[in-house]
Length: 490
Image (tube, rainbow, N blue to C red; front, top):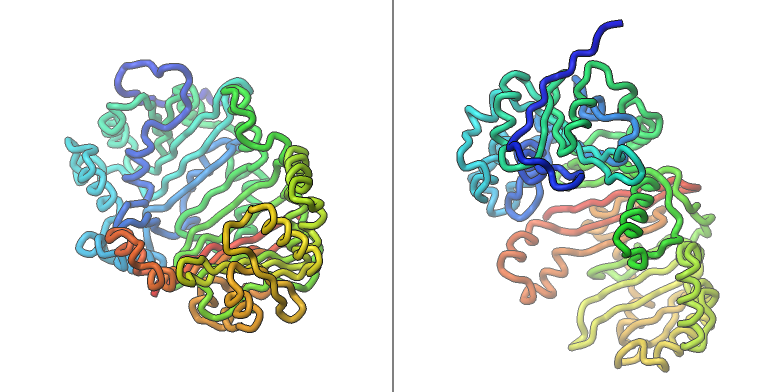
């Protein structure tokens, strides 16, 4: 058997880590240099197409990695052009980024402007060895009592130059770095660095069945990608709350499970986050044919949120926790209604919440459902009587047999008779496939800026103006969900 040769481990500083804090001291340092994210024009810019030729960061991390994110800093083709053009919509990016820019250098110089790495030169200290791919993984601790370990994986083009330069970048941190097989592995846990840079370290994350299947099912590669074992992350959160005496800060009996995979990519001029959740702890209710109702809202709606099978979805989520059931029962008794039964009946097979701007000093908000008008009436009456809603009281109407509740009579009538949101170009661009979605969220950014521009600060307005809308849509059956988050530009 070939003898394993332990790689050289580069460790900076000389100070011992206080306790076993398992976080990357390089985050905020090398992350910003090579992660492909530069705070330019108020937006985070991620660049390049993943899963090209050559090894990926997941080929270095172990199969039991809990969470993982990666970026590739070698922009190519349409993705690079789209990314840079997206960045150039921000005023602060002009003159700093072009379609031929070395984006790693842009990020490094941005950090120097913020006061970091003043004594280093990108051309001589970083460029000669830095590679294109970057990843961060969260690994389980040595035992269940140990905190998880954060590990950064960075592709290098020249291992010897990387070994010489890394101590300069980690000098003010508690981070150890090892270099092997074309990657630098950095962490505050020196033992983990040593193990991951051995010649043979067993099954990798790339080979793990859950990870590989999830990333393959996600489809088209993007400019960045991430993967999370939601069940294990939830368990870690519970353990942290127990250890700190903060268990009551969240619902302890909520179901945990599933795996999340996401990809960030450019769809023409728009930025899109596509995701998939597998093996969810709860199943989707059967479709009732009501849709979310968002596409049937009046044109000019500034924001909307809709649920298909709303009554079942909401009730299933709420009743998954005994504590929430107890709280709802008590609240229902105080209001003189029966919860969650009246709530499920009122929401029915779809529920759509809409925001239409202001009517004088009154916010125009309305809810249209596919539920029982009598149940809606009971809830509205209870909220009006119990002072849950400030004056003016809620107003109830109908639209094609659907109950409508609004903060003003005029907006209730408008929601009952108006249509056209689904035909707006800004809506279609932001929420593709909205008709068949189980969940839809839509925000008309341009419309909100026009209606409430005076309430935006100068800097915020400048960075919001390039955008048209934000859309979120979720599709799914059984215990799988696919979602898209899209930020569109004017």
